[in-house]
Length: 288
Image (cartoon, rainbow, N blue to C red):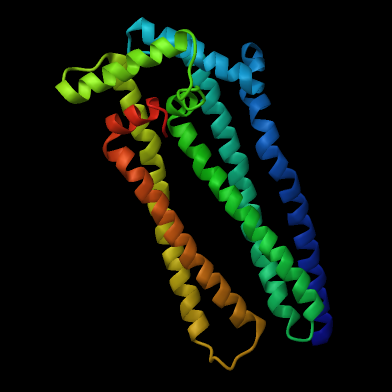
């Protein structure tokens, strides 16, 4: 078969693959936001799909849990935590599938951009725009994966973040005042904390440890990717004007920037992971 025929066949195949991957991504993106609430809820939790109902349920369950004086969750608190775990696990799974599709789509677009060559300026402009959009969505998907794995690892702390701790009212305000006092006393005097406080401190530590671990892995991945791309970029001379060299340069720079951003995320969570009691006190004081 003539070479131009093979190239045309390859181009059509790549075009179909990009179309299919784009369609899958277009389905997964809204699914990541719309599907988890309904899938995570059973018949008794259908109201949790409404944010205000879920927030009220978390506040009431936390009041009951704190008043129980036990480490183990009350049935109401367990129901909320189990729902919130399922919600994050489902959302993390969909987001991960979206991320994989977007990475594959980005690679396909990159190859088509390089194959277009200098003669296909119009095609390359369209592919470059598609590549930028794909990259932006991939970053969003990665953020969703990290946030929802974190929520699934420590659903109790994640659920507590829904409470209006900065401006509580009614019985919740009194309960949070007691929690803050117990945290302050345990840090200042070293006295044994109530079982519920121990539970919260341990879960708060896991909440931030999850991000530390994921961030450390991502930093290594982005550093390795950056090194490979910079090496390939430098292996071609500055006089080389081919689109492939410029694309490698841009992606090498982006990988370097992402490694720095993820390193900042790691450092930001490291303090709370190392000193969870102080971090939890800060959370209940209105910060997170």
